[in-house]
Image 1 (cartoon, rainbow, N blue to C red):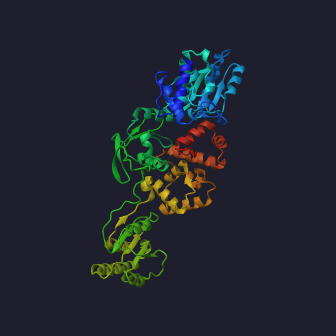
Image 2 (cartoon, rainbow, N blue to C red):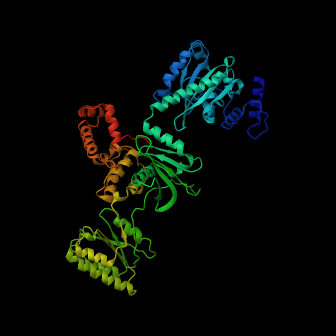
Length: 570
């Protein structure tokens, strides 16, 4: 049989993937598929694995597997059978055998810690093929693609997380004369024991997310399962999310009224068939979202950012008036609205809050000459100056109506802080657009951060970590967009790396309260923890001592109160 299998493999290598081969029926289908992949990856059947990388001895996989491997190594004493564990890249991270002579033989074929046994490195073998096939496999003798492994038999199985993600593989291997059908059952058992340890070491919230993902995912419909820190997506759902949209979407979901059980969210200012539901299983609430299939032409991750401003435009050829709080992007909004006109020219800008004696005759002359004028911060006008504003506006309206002018008078104002006479004058002109405080639509913030970074960092040398972006979303922004621009400009100027992390943000933003409501007791506890951390210079062990609690308790309370500043990826 060995010679027949070898000839089938050599024939397939000779004729190539497009040639006619008689290998089908000689070997199992999964072996034939693996041979074809090996040929497609240009693997040499006569060479050993040469790729080497130092094994990570502190990986999540190895921490879970070590006690299991130790127990089974004891069972393998006085046998020629060896236990192998590989990571998801195919590198062997652990090898357990009870005989030093066996170790020396395995060293000669590079079956040792650090060597790459993925399919694209050494071809068909238990460790690599089980991960590609995502199932337990048995490979013996010349079914291996490499001639160096022809004297061995191995049974292998993938090791997966609770969500089904392959973390690595486990294998029992030995001389072909030791081959036994029970090897496959034993390998499955070892793999299941490692997976059970992975489950038991996971946080309860992570397990809750994993369970919801397995329950609600649909292989064809884009699906997301998420909480504030983590997100799981099936393959169709990946194009709907990135770091910025995760933060924005979390804010949108947190602010939603869930009394009806599920909701259809408004994204990008339009209604899509997106069904969202809140799941209360687990320590904290999380959310499940199903999307309609995205048209193929849409390649960019969908933005969940609301429009930069809520507007109600009153068409007027003579005026564009934007009303809203200072720093809410009024000037940008008015200029963007004005730029949509076909006959736009340059705009002369006058800041009414610092202009002193307002040059009203010059304003009138500029408008009469066909030049557009922007009067910024009209709330800075004194009540007595409201008459001048009304007079200029009345003359301009009449001139435009008579066809004598084509210029536009643009105006920004905050009605809440303007004098009564100024507010009356603005109402007479008519408000075109209203802007709102930045925190009234927190889901706007990730999109604004991206557009501001594009301006203040045109070379794209800096980006924000997920934790830093979440902190920006949680801050109250009393200075609105102006404060956000100033903050990002300073961060870009002083950043000591390409990724701006939460610890580099101003202290008041790092310590911004979470957007969820805290009880009086939780608020007091939060303030006490912040004070202790500040007194301890950020050292959590010392802070725990100052608070009179254990370090593990402090870590848990920091996370529960939204004070975690880790920079883990989303």
